[in-house]
Length: 307
Image (tube, rainbow, N blue to C red):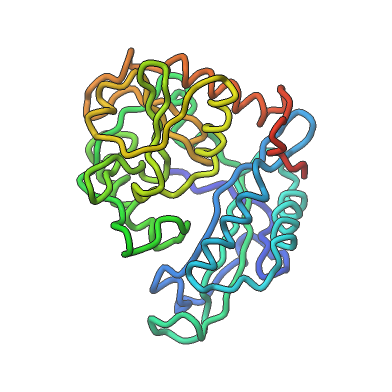
């Protein structure tokens, strides 16, 4: 695979440094114990200028994740939001992916993270559609994973923590090894949880369903956006436990996420979902979502923060 595209500057503990100089010590706590919390968000070129999608919500979730892990971020939420906007400005980008991350740095190397400083970084770079442009229309083929999502009271699924993504990596690598674009994991009770970094929705008889937070999901911000937009369009959205086989017989199934945006699923375990391509409900939600992010329709929910 080609290397990720570089931007010019990275915000590192309050200062801008060159991309290649944004480095940490190999004995930093995060390297050995996965002690990080982070966000993934997008800045869109709206036609009226670059704008971050749901900036405040992403910053709030970053701080919620840090609170769960007793990781005090040494900046206010307002300072963090401004650091994100300034990083986009400094790099002169109009559309980009944004990665704010807080992690335990170099101090002591033991399981207890508290003697280690909390370092904070904001990086931005140009990044296209996560699952490919064709995925937005034709959909992707996925499989159910042999790996389950986190059991309750083991690791907090409400926190967007780096360590949690070891589980997602297993889900994703297994799927790709078998020729699928992505995997969908079940929770420890056998109900549908989420993909390897995306939330899951299904459409059946004109109604929309998605797993609730009790199914070990990360409550995605794009997930919430889709729920709001679906209700705006007159659809009934139900959050509840979902059986695996319900997805097989659904009219439509799609992923949501800051990276994946709204990506339809054409096949699961080689079973064709609906007509095997993007369905009308998914298309309507894409139109509503991209209408806002591209600045073509009114931002009636106040989701855009202009850079």
